[in-house]
Image 1 (tube, rainbow, N blue to C red):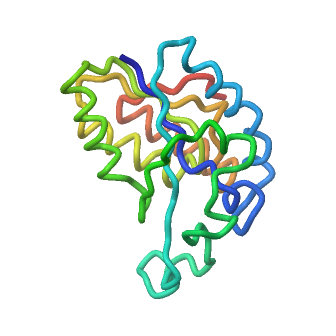
Image 2: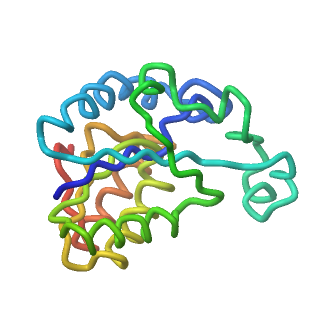
Length: 176
């Protein structure tokens, strides 16, 4: 079995509080990739960055004092183009999701996972964090990132994250 992970394709990361032109540009590519997943035999899982009203009082909030992805707000929602495709997103309070790792490990125990591909936002924060976490939970599965369906905080940090993932034996597909 293969898995496609769609990381944090939320309004605040696309055209909201922390949005970028690069994030807006990947929405059609991500949507097409998710729509292709069943034909590729992939199970699709979405993650959703989730903060509470006290975000600015958290360690992350003190280091990045921009309220974003506050539970229940429009910015927290999956972008409209993907919303109907996102069945039960995995809410994660931080960059990497231990719940996602455990869910993948449970799936792997039932039906071995051959490959996990990550797409979404941000390459240099949540995509890389979850890719490395998945390598820890599933050391024998191939972990890949489709670079054409990811965007970083900046184009430079996107490229740096892709290079770091390559060094950690994560396959980078469609890279620059």
